[in-house]
Length: 432
Image (cartoon, rainbow, N blue to C red; front, top):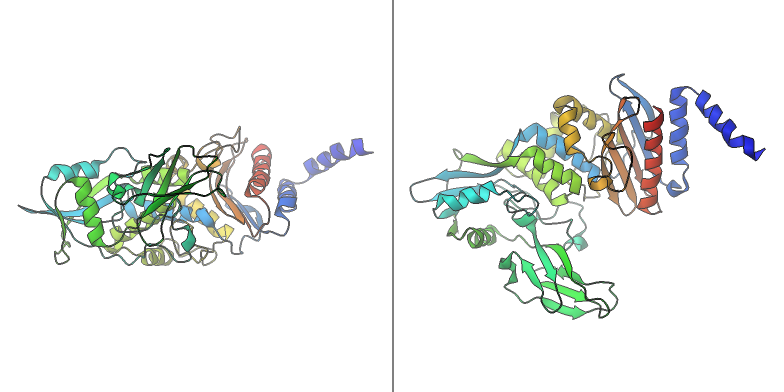
C-alpha cells in the first residue's frame, strides 16, 4: 500500500485546478516544520492577468528587514533620475564652496572610479564647506545600539567617506587601519581566549579601535568597522586630509543658486546596494533623494513625501522609518511589497529592474536557486528570527509573477527557512 500512496497523491495533485495546486504547494511551505509557530505571509500576483494567484495573510504586517530596500530602490529611481548627486558647489575667484548631498559612493572602496574626488582635487582652490540641513541622526530609529561597531551599521551623515567605515587589517604584530587618517591613535590589542578568531572593533564613544584575539588563532584578518562621523568640523578635517587642500567650515554662504556635481549612475549604486544588501548605502540613497527633492536631508520627510504621493495607493498603510530595514519599527505587508514591485516593473521596465535585483546564485541569492538563473530576481530580508524574500519569478512556461514570502517570529535556523522558501518557489517555477 505504501508503494501506491505517493504516486497516487501526485496524480491527485496533478488533477487539481491550477489555483488549487498552488494552494497545495503553499500549504506544504506553511506546514514545514521549520516554520512551526511562525507568522507567515504569502502573496503571488500575475500582472498580465491582473489578479492575485495566491494570498495568505498578505494583509498582515511583518518586519521587512532588508526588503525595505525595495521601497528605497523605488524612491531613488523615482526622485533621483539617472545620476547620484555628489555635492552642491559654487566656484568663485578664490574659493570653492561645497555642500554634502549624502553621496555614499564618495571614496567608497566598492566604487573604484571616483569622478567627484578627482574634480575636487583638480579645482585647485581652498574649499569652504557649507553645512547641509541634515535632520537625520547618525543612527536610525529602532536600530540596535550594540551593533555600532558592526560592518552593516555605519553611521549616517551628510557627506559619507569610505562608506563611513575603516578597513582593519590584523596581521601578527602589525595591525593597521585604512584610511591612514585613523591610525593616529594606537590600536588596542588584547588576548581573549573565548573568541574563535581575531575580532577587531571600536570603542563606543570614540574612534579608538582595538583587536582581541585568542592565543590559539591569531591568523590574519581583514574587517570593516564603522567610525564615528562626528561634527561638520570633523568632516572638514577628513576632507582636508584626503584632498590635501585647506578646508574650512562656513555656515553663512547662500547655496540656493549652487550647481550640482553628479558622481555616478543611480542604477550602479542601487545594483551594488541590492547585491551586497548594503545597509549604509540604502540609508544614504534615501537621504540623497531627500536632499535632491527638498534641499534638506530628512529620511522622515522623504518617506512622508513618497507615502503621500507615489505610494499613496498601497493596499495597507506601512510603518516605514529607514532606508535599510535595520529598524524593527518597520512594518510592511506582503501585498504592499508586491504592489511596489509591480510599480517598479511598470515604471522602469524589466530590463532595468532585473539588472538591479540579484538573480539565482548571485549576491544575496548565492548558493540558492541553482538552475533558475535569469528566472528569479529577488531581495532577501532577514533578522535572527525572520526571513523574507520578495521579487520577480519567470516560470518555465514564460509566465512572469510578482511574489512576496515573509516569515517572522520563527524559532529555527534562517538557512532552513530559506531552503523551505526555495522549494516552494522552485515548484512554482516548474509548474506554473
